[in-house]
Length: 346
Image (cartoon, rainbow, N blue to C red; front, side):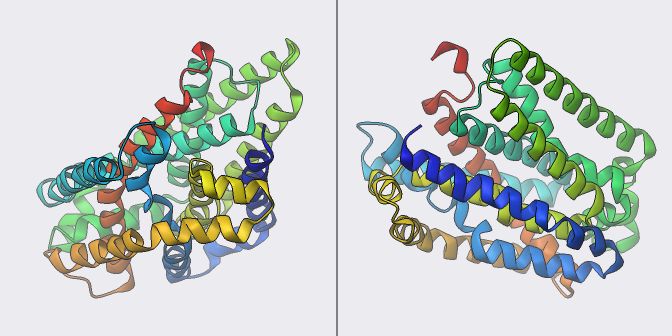
């Protein structure tokens, strides 16, 4: 591992994980407070880093693949965002409940995808095959998306009703529409998947350690999983997701993108963190602003309008859903370039 890679791992993955662990007592108290606290946390996290973490996607092909020009890089990613993002927004207008469920599934995939890439970047040895990494994806994405459905289904359902309610003017109809997503059978099935995947992943990793893989990487992976289980079991869902999105997922991706920028990587390797972050901020600034414009556009277009904090959160999540699908595609392409999902063939 190079010095720049080690520095990125410490600053953007390890230290934020320790910070989230330190915040557990605060998270445990959040169910006692109004959901507006979670909405404010989500808004602050999105403003600080959440929106920016995907705002350099237009430069990823340029920096990660030799021979790709700046013009081609921007053009391909722009088309992907326009077509895929527009399709997501249209799906919310056409079938809001199905679109919400699809957004949850997509986020499960993407947040698992991000954590596995971070583990690969850290050089862990207990996930040497694509199968084991996919199982880790199920765990890492399932913790933020599935555990709150077990621990705090009421607030989870409230967010679903807010989102569906943007497109269904009758509040009673919105509440009835999300019923199938929150029946006990659904919650138990999701919980069973996350628990079984967690036990399997931890157990298989330990078996790798017994056969010679580094214990340090396995202990880190297991420790992070334990922190995430505790965080999403204890904290109120909107607050938990808002803090996780900014402090955990987004920062890990920022670190990864800094490492595909040669100038930022050189700065990080020299210990000049400020210069590396300044380059990232400069590159991300235009599309970060564009992302907020897109969120505002969703709010203005929603049939039911945006009149309360819950509506604002719902409109933001629909806009983020539209940005997430193309972002997942760009990230998957980067995963392939870096061999994240085929470690046994590198």
